[in-house]
Image (cartoon, rainbow, N blue to C red):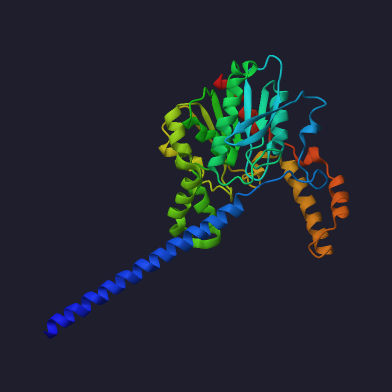
Length: 360
């Protein structure tokens, strides 16, 4: 009798322990899901155009005097996106520019102008919830793939563009989109992906580790689930698989000192040994001071110039207790040489230009 009572008590104890563990797991999952939603929604909100009086970024109006511009629009899902078409007579092809997170098409006007000067036609656009495009929030990395897919369908619908060979230039989020849009059925002659992650979840987890350490690895399933809830199959796409599947020529460029998309982490370039497409080339930039996420795009002179101006801006911030009056900001930025601040890494751009020509 006592043995049966002991066995019964042990069974009840095990049952209670299992119920407690289940309850803890449910609470942990619920809190994790809610936490990831809160974090991701805040990170992937809306990105409005900066005040032109307080930024070094160029505006498309800066180019219109010398470069014809046609403002166009197209739908991506339910949102209408703003597009910028720069046609060039007798162009060898059309460069589609996919911008990085936090910016818009204008953020890459130096690159756009470079391509135009080389004779290319260029099509750029503001992604969903960026600059002059509709949308309440970006919501996540896969939105970039969907927007580029929509942009390419727009290009294909235009008789004056449909016959041009299409190449894609993308940096960061744009590079991720450029690689992953190869999962879709478009006639792409080649792509260049600079500082690009391969997959959305991998990039998010990598960044999360910088804030949460090892704990972020426990959140991977919830990152994955939330992105799938928002984007469906698009959330599962990765650049490595796209490059292998499509067989399209690609140039993957990455700085060894990138602290946003790690060279040996989420970057497509870290998958080099698993990418079997023989048409994919890899370029690692290891020049100290010009091997970062954004510095990779700039000239040495532009980097030095920005460093000096940033030091001056920090001094102003200290002078005004961290809140620089708007008029003081306007005066400061009015003195900045935007051409110098945006001067390109011409060696890299020449490599990209020649690569595109080789794709035709």
